Figure 1 (cartoon, one colour):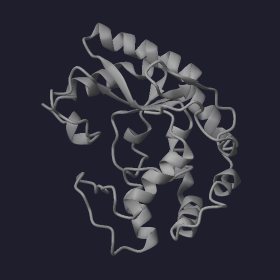
Figure 2 (figure 1 turned 90 degrees about the vertical axis):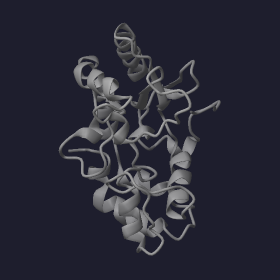
Figure 3 (figure 1 turned 90 degrees about the horizontal axis):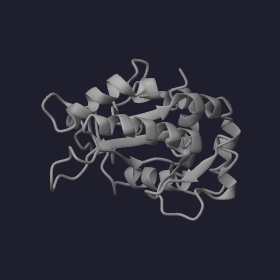
Figure 4 (figure 1 turned 60 degrees about the vertical axis):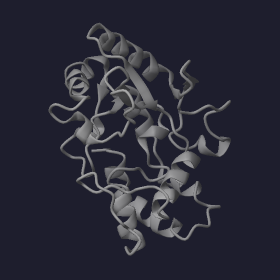
Length: 227
């Protein structure tokens, strides 16, 4: 989670203009209105015996860039549709990007940049000694987060949240843990400008940058779940 004095450098402000980020007591940054609605959902969860916690909220471009670079260069695992690690070393740049973005966002095209989106889990349902995986298998019938999945299906929408990576139009991996506060997210997404996205790469020198820009231009609507 972010432990910063400021959520992102000034050069990132043009990306999704209009963000209003505040720092939560837990240490992460989020859109102010979205955070307030999350508190309502957390209260509902507590009433049903679920300790709803956030493991990821706002994420800066630079943080997402490092995550992507680590995956592209083999320092972080890349998962396939079965949530198994796949070797992408022999793939073309475009094929590597496609494989990575099945479960991970392109820097600059992550909904976590908005501040309206949260990755959540149930702290009290995670078995002792079990590391949080953020995989679909954790929500399978009989798995430890199955009750959380049922709760989110029943209650998230009433608090204004959608799960964009569970929609039928999404072509990547399912993410039942990813919540987006719809009202604010739609406002910020409507202001998206590809030129602002491309500008963030102006001083990046990694070999994959041209392929990322090309892939981003071709697929940004799908990657951001713009419908």
